Length: 141
Image (cartoon, rainbow, N blue to C red; front, side, top):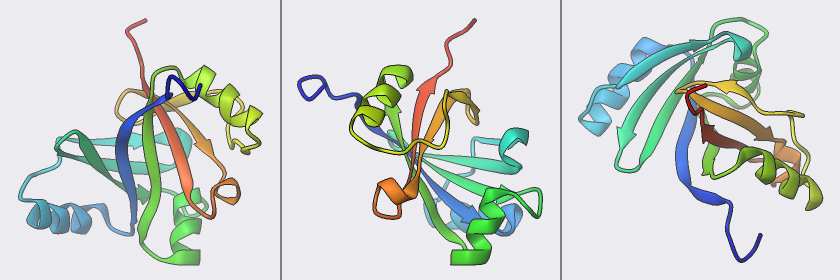
């Protein structure tokens, strides 16, 4: 894989927020643009809001349930950078490669995420405390 990198680009940076409306207002002022999409992801108990910034995105992530992983993150670390997401060419091959390299994956298989993506998370304990998300566009089925 070293001859053909599987990571295409930084897809987005996820930011954990307590109040999605207040965060949307803040980032609209900061970036000078409005979010292009808001979406609830029931499997993660979050609502997301996306801002397009050049080729990359900022994803605001707000918990919808008290026991959601994002709420636990905020209670432990406070609001702020939650994860870095990388776009990959082939999420299955990327997951296999990372497992072979000794990384611990949170997901055994890709699942549907926000913004029409297949996603998989790499445990932060494997990456010096940084939660990594792999993303691949869902092709029309």
